[in-house]
Image 1: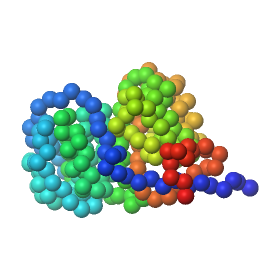
Image 2: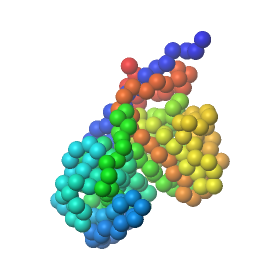
Image 3: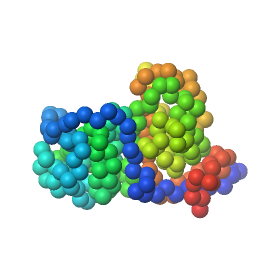
Length: 230
């Protein structure tokens, strides 16, 4: 008989708006179009915080220079190493852009509504520095599904990733992607894969916010100090 499950609840707060790090460069609005999807790309001017406004969920444009009102926010690129997708909250989009106004910010806007999973919040695709082991990244994950339980203040991911975010996918160049559908997608598996490929450039982890209760294996040893256990 399996052990009873514990439950963790994730909630997004203003304090968890990720802040990326990059060299700030100037930018002007532009809108190249992806022919197959109709998605356009708009570069926001560095330093500007009053040239965009959004509403709704899925999030739509009210005002963005270089884009039509009513387009949907498909994803946001912040600096060179952080992409935010599964855009569910207009207020947090503005907070994200405002918090990173000193960096390059790029909107990908779609004429079509973006499908959303109502149990999830934002998805954060982070391109990891090398070495990319958890030890070098100074972060800790535990459990099944893998959940972030600690990020050191000295971590290169500090300010981008926070406790209670789940690992949704691991992408290592040259290897199959690992995600919740992969056998044995545990924190230990992710840790071992990162350790073996630590010096491979271009490794990405997709972290996600979860807005509903998630069952965790009792044996996963999720740290209660960093989680809300119901």
